[in-house]
Amino acid sequence: MGLTDLLNLLVAAILLAGIYTTMSMGMTVIYGVMKMVNLAHAGFMMLGAYFALELSQRTPIDPLAASVLAVPLFFLLGVATYWTMVRFVPVADEPTLPSLLLLFGLWLVLQNVGYIVWGADDRSILTAMTMATLRFGGITIPIIRLIVFGIAVLSFVALQLFLNHTWFGRSVRALTQNREAGQLVGIDTRRTAMLTFGLGIAFTGLAGALLATLYSFTPDFGASFMLRSFVIIVLGGLESFSGVAIGAVIVALIETFSILVVPASYQLAISFILLVVALLVLPGGIEGLLQRRRLQR
Amino acid sequence: MTPAASPSPARNRLAGTGAVLTLAVLLLLPSAGVPSNVIRLLLGTFLWVAASLAWNLLGGVTGQVSFGFAVFYGLGAYTAAFAISGGVNPYVAFAAAGLVAALGSILIGIPTFRLRGPYFAIATIGVNEAIRIVMSNLAITGGASGYRLPAAGRFSQAEHYYTALGIAAVAFLVSWYVMRSPFGLALRAIREDQDAAADLGVHPFRCKLTVHALSAFLTGMAGGAFARYTAYIHPDGVFSFATGISILLMPVIGGLGTLPGPVIGAIIYSIVQEEMVVNFPQFHLLLYGALLILIVLFEPGGLVGLAKRLARSVRGRMTGGPGEPAVARARLGKVGP
Image (spheres, rainbow over the protein chains, first blue to last red):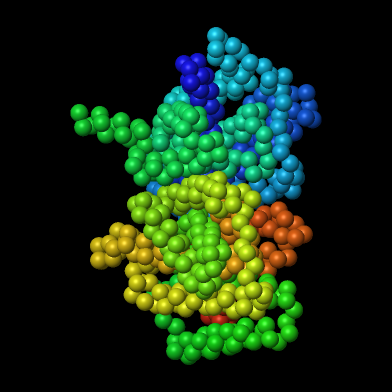
């Protein structure tokens, strides 16, 4: 195992962390404002993947462009989901059982509608760049992963700007920090929750479409990514937007480098064990840990 | 449910008589010339009833939702399979299956019960998937190709039927006993408000571990009986997330925290499964998903809640007074911590 191999793994991990950030952002904004764990995350990711597939097969639109088009569409889908179902579920300071069961039921519905519409065959999206690579010395970078990473980083930056520089973004952050105080200063919680759910689903759809250009998928697609997203937001401290990026890097690094020690078939198990460990020993996530350190000094 | 519901003695006697009569009919069925596919359907139903009642003790009565009961079903199935292959008496093997599952539940519960309700629920998804993946990759479970039990003696459907009925009856009696015992009251107190319960001298962690082990024991026995009946199990079947979901769906459909709810849920689940899986393999999960959404939105008390609500409105109409408002709506909201 030479240095170049390690560097290759490192680059792969960082590129993976980009898309992991995008998919987890969708979950974290929803958790932040509504304190709901979106168990339908996988279903919307799957829809995003098939959206990119359908669009690239039926129209000359490039799948990567299709993934960007998914954003407004999935925003509307998220708003519609909130309006028809999610708004009837009680909200509290931590996830409630009805919200878990409702979103879980929605996942089952989406997944199996997917099976009825698209069948159980493995699908994949080939783009002009799928096989192309860049080489720097011994390091190989698949171009498609680089582009996906670029889109992911752009979307992350866009979201940060949006949250920090618009009134809606302010109300999202306010409700994330303290729901009641937010209400006291006159934030329309329902409207904010609706738009946030839309925003979260938009990110989820984008992530699904982007992942579809990297991996093959079936209507079952997304389940493992949903759990990874959850690991990431737990590591990130559940409601911290920058914590998500840290969590994504950690999960991507651990998954990528675990190949060196554990057989590849156990790789998924590692994320799940990480989930339980993170929930247990890092209740405030990495951010919380850092804050505690700061306070102690 | 009203706290510590104590139905009138007359209703109690009625329910008791009904249970005994049902048991008598079920005992006589195999010798009454009932077609063997009906017996097979009933047999499967009994095992689901047992798992459903078991899950209800933890999820419904104590309010700790677990997505990971497939672990106990799978542990039970494999323990029984190994024991029977090794020549152990099947009934001893079932007990061993329950014990191994209970042991597993304690190992899982010690770390995960440090988490509060919803976080526990999500951790169980992780635990279930991690264990499934490990089991599919181990050589002793037969890996992804499964494990076949050796045929021992003549196959007697009636014997399997009585075994399953016995396990369901045990689960029912245990549930009935727990729900009216002081231990059951402690469990309900934890569901309603864990901190208040702790202040009153209930030890939430210990109670949760105990009920988790009890649930796992019953689920493990059901898994063991399933393994002996089908004589072929594989990790992606018994340990699958779908198995865990099924075990969770039945009590939710029927009515969380009640005694008849999980039984009704399991019966409906088994019939729907039987009718739909062959013809529309994807459609049944779609249906369960839709049902889950409808139950959360409209009748958190499940079918039992719906029946109660209907009964109330009928009674209200008969006495001329206004029907009582649907108090059931708030129930599911309360189940969470």
